Amino acid sequence: MPRKKNNELKAYSFLIVDENTVIPFENLTQKQKDEYIPRIMKNIGRAGSDYLNCHPDEAHNYLEHKHRVMEKFTNAIAELDRHLNCTEIQGK
Image (cartoon, rainbow, N blue to C red):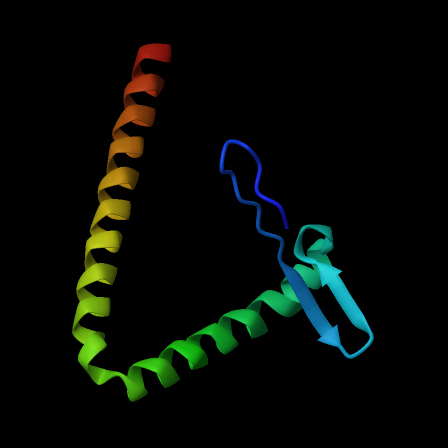
């Protein structure tokens, strides 16, 4: 795919259901998402586990990164809660 002048890249995701069925991820119905996403997540988990089993030296860095990301999410959610509570109080 040719690059745009602003160096923007686009990514397209497809779900390969079987040999004859390929669905653009953005076109999945809610029913299809409910059916396929748990299987996708299980496959991702298995692939990640397999990778870390083959590269145990990288597990520590992965876990540290995961901890930092979780901490950032927790802080962001706490900040959003504070903001929403403040908005509710001002609205009363």
